[in-house]
Image 1 (tube, rainbow, N blue to C red):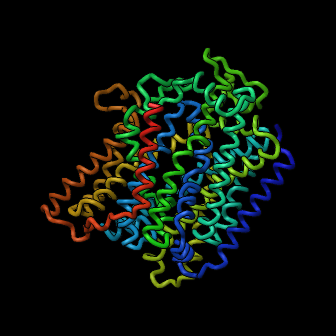
Image 2 (image 1 turned 90 degrees about the horizontal axis):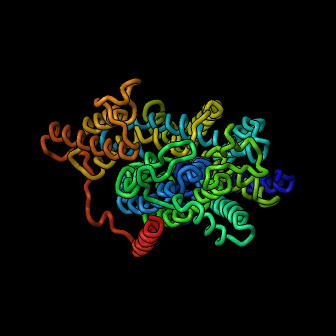
Image 3 (image 1 turned 60 degrees about the horizontal axis):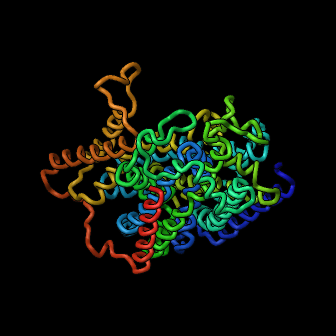
Length: 558
């Protein structure tokens, strides 16, 4: 099915509407840094919840997780379902402290708890991560998907797609700041859910020969029941490229192990995620927004993981024989096997009918553009408030701070546009990003957790803990050539690596803090009181319902 003029018209209309709304909601913005970076602290709970999901669901999930669903199965959905529980933890135990401190940025917490030097180190790290990893990978994956769906997969539209996505996100986010990003996210998240469901529904209907969605789902489960296992045993799932999926999702580690390190770091201390909660009208509004996002997380696997499993069933039979049907050959490798990260684009192009295809592509663009806009705004916030203002412009006017934010975001976007085409042969992109972010995230998480909940943690302990965490992580991950079988080096699944690195980093901090502080509380230690973590009945009841649903889901798909 080709991308018709009807689809093009729908897609163009979507772009005009989003840019128009972004500019319209920005017209009320003032010229202060709070207006630009924190939306004037006026966001209601439903905008916060929608914006959290829109910022999170990007090409990594829409394309990368579908690819992992193709290769691994439903088990990859643990990133989504465990995120729901993580969000509840963040809302109850992290947000009260962050909002009480009146933070603009996450690095700012490090300054208030530890030191300016450590804050600057982490601020530079996060800017580099956003620009060189997050922005580039989202642009690369998004452009690849656009080229595959709208073009012939030859790459002819690839560069144009990168530039188009970059200009699209810049058109409203650079001018309007977080206010424009958050309010357009409300529309974007509705669109991406609807678009994702359309793809899933048509694919399931095709599998069942028109007998309906439930029949299709039943047939998919009957053909590959192993793909619906959430807790993998060693050797249970061998991916199409011959890799044991257990190494990516090692058993119970997804519930009680390293998955917590990845999720707590991402949802609790990631600027472009947590920033919209810092812009809430109040703590209660932020917590209600967190719960809404947690609830939405429960349904996300239907639109980002299930399509990959369906694509697997359509292309790889029980005997391993691949059937490409009438699909575009560019989706497949030289051996005839569909490329993992082409699973979702293949379904969209092959089975979504004319008219709806434009809507689905708009949903994909919404996922990509909303994430790019969020990353740009957060990069600008950290650079302006944590680097420029304290070191280069302590007396700079509010208006100039906003201008610096716009300029820094523009530079970040230009760098990402230049680097994105250089990303090649990443395999399962979602797993790749998770794995290599996992080298640095345990140490950073350790700094925050110790800073929040152990008053004796010292600044030197935090610095040494985060620095030593990297060689500790690499010890379990990378052995020198020819040494892989040496007793000196141990290679383990990256989730185990993250958990061990996190624990060892905290132990290092505890030892140094005890020696340096002689058993005394640090002067900047956070005073914890019972009332600080008090939550509303709405938050408590909603959280309880979400936890019950999670228990049921893991019970069914164990």
